[in-house]
Length: 111
Image (tube, rainbow, N blue to C red; front, side, top):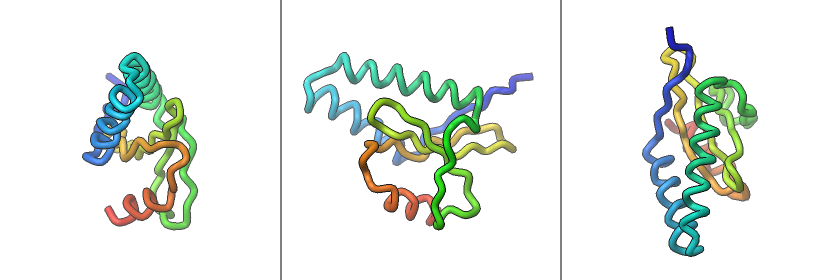
């Protein structure tokens, strides 16, 4: 029996990842750093799939019934929602660490 969780990216998380990789590789002209970020991201996701509750819970009054968690990936924060019944990690967003959390919380709460 496999106890590891699977993971799925939301459409917004996929767009975030595309934007991050494009920014690093094209705008910063550093494809090696983009590749390194992708490896770091995969390492973090693998760890989360093994230990879903490893990330810190996002505490916010607008998310009282959701166990949204976060984990650092370099200068970025990966927001995810573990579904223990289905054994799936939903990757919600990957945002630059200094970006406002309020926008994200409103999005999650409306879904």
